[in-house]
Length: 118
Length: 146
Image (tube, rainbow over all chains, first blue to last red; front, side, top):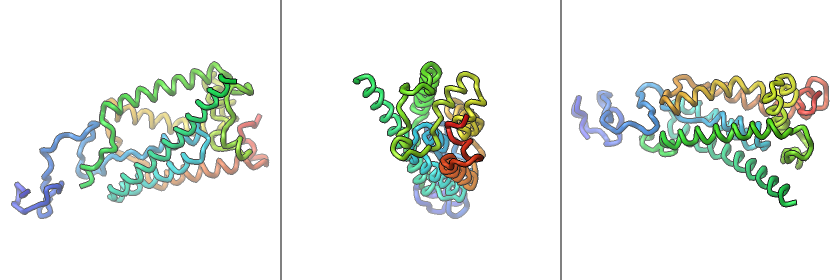
């Protein structure tokens, strides 16, 4: 597309004009979840730190600890402008906390069934 | 551009459903632990990490601490799992932020710096190791401390 401000040709996916910095994507639909498209602040990327801490404290497995490390990476990379890296770390943080939560829950359910059966 | 790829972000509606589900789940869990005493042997399964290794994990004593807290015994909860009690203010602040985000769309403007989260990581690892040391200052971290 062409920048409506200065007329420079830009890639369709560009958020700002490469020449003058004019915002090109303003007309787009609002993002899901009510997140504002702030253009100076880094985007909000969940780091799942609370989930990691809770699964460490309640699921009795070392897996939640891994989630804490990924949570640190999310905030670090997001703050440094590495959005792709922060999102990858976010996915990993979510994954490890989910595995920890799932295994903890499965262990509990398994034991309840065992107790009821015997 | 990255902002178009964030499909891992749940929609507002599923976020709200998750919020309600998490609250109901937590409420039920606390209610069960309130009524069914975890100090009584046989009421709950033993921590799998402890059962396999014979060592305490960072979560050992969490159920007993929750039981104590739900009965208003803060001091007892500190003996069962001090890190859980220490985490409560942080969890409370995070809960408020989460509520604001899910129901009012308020995106937190300040995030924890990476170094602070690595600090939390170090704290958890140190706690996990030290509460297994059977010497005085550390033995008070164990879930069996009087």
